[in-house]
Length: 498
Image (tube, rainbow, N blue to C red; front, side, top):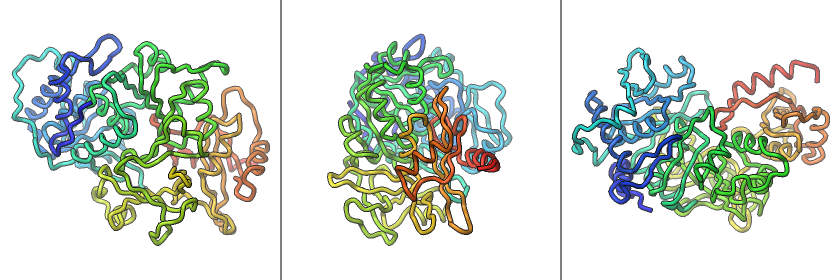
């Protein structure tokens, strides 16, 4: 393993591997492979193309691509010349896309989609096959050796409804690479795949961490590839996924299936709480090599529960990574004793120090050198973190504090439930009445009354007063809940008689 840990350009991590292992495979595609030397040349040629279009250090370049390899090459080329990348998933609605591009002050749109033309942006068409054939000399003087602008801006949801702009610098990215290596030490023999598209920040980190470690990544046709067959055919050793993908993998297997992903040395589901029931099913049906991770877009990885620990304590997300300082504090910022529930706060070299152009969010999240992610948790006696949900989602009913995670983890234990989200129904009398939206496994029938009784028997006064059964819960590709859509669906259901 060799990951660049200097304060220079993050794309140097690829250059190091191209020098050390030029003919080794960096990327597995469906019908061919790309070596580290080829990958390095693709990035240089793309950097030269971008520079030739007058892109300067600090310019924001929006990236939207059909071809995932082209996206990865483009974001490394953007980094190499000191510009800033901003990914726009292809499924982004037009109005939302325009608002986001205006918010980040994007000047260019790099794409492989012919006909793309956004008002106010210069459109740059990239053809990956033409880049493979290109033979002009490489001008390495274009490398920005001390980039000051962020490499990447990603968007996070805000409690006020305004999106948060999360800037990640070159040095911050490199610090996060060290955290990833601490959690799951990489090997040059690894083959890494992500069921989450590289449009999303976490998948970017996973793919680049693998490449910069001398490992290879597997890119595939997401619409026509069975993930289990992908892992078997490509001999994937590390698989990242959203919770929804894991449920889909399990659902396509026979109930008696065992160790269906036997080639994996690590399966890492992310995006939402991995409840204990799902952990048990993963360990039996998919792989014993399950890692449960806690982190945010602002921080990168924070804690991890390794195989052998994922069921040691109910709800554990493991211990903090080396270099991460994590505390549980009360509302006044005073550390709480082990076992008491409170606010999570942390420090590490991988944490951003501000949101762009959002004073109110900065005041809430950054306090006295600590980052406050807005999450609630507690420590066990042996130092494991139990994640209890979001502090700003805590419900209070008749003076009783009710954490969504407690409802969700409980209802998830019902054998009919495959996905669940707890949320408040606001009441002038009781303050917050807890309700829970659930989706069921295919061909399974259960009534709301049965689910309510199941919850009441396990939660007592903290049980949800309504359980809304939906065909599915609205989530993004990487498993993030679409709260507005869910709230609308729940409201429609609640209009029917209880």
